Length: 210
Ligand SMILES: C[S@@+](CC[C@H](N)C(=O)[O-])C[C@H]1O[C@@H](n2cnc3c(N)ncnc32)[C@H](O)[C@@H]1O
Image (cartoon, rainbow, N blue to C red):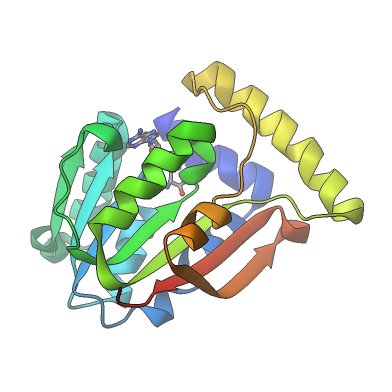
């Protein structure tokens, strides 16, 4: 799936997913230590390195193939920036992240891979890795609360979860909104952006010092 992901994405949504990924990068220009999890093929990583020139970035992905694609993209397009990046292959739940270390956390189309207790554990792990006053960029699928937009999203989500369940073995069967879990840990949403009638969604969250 790793190589097919970007072409399929363009076929289904044109440039809308990438617009969601990068929509709020202008707010993290001063980031010093960033964490991007479930990075995929490196399109977000490249944009992040460009947007936050002082940031060291830790990239975690369970897929060796995805990490290889991301590394190759950097080697091809911005080899000088490779020194700013640490690639870590592994399941997030098994990766030892330094507590309170990252002033920027980014999850692009990653939290939608989890539901229930798994989603709770993922949010807890990332919350623990975030610095006391951190920013969290979330780009993801989304289901608007009502009306035709909700029905439209429901049809797409049924298709997408069936497709990814078969092709990647993902155990998530439905989209769960991560917002209550972030709010419960003191995060506040400060901006949102929608594409494709709200099916694609981007958010910025901040956490004040505890
Ligand atoms: C749907 S893809 C999204 C990729 C990319 N962020 C994007 O915006 O297109 C989910 C990514 O998360 C990775 N992933 C899934 N479960 C993971 C886990 N438990 N730990 C780390 N990475 C994981 C997959 O390998 C894949 O690269």
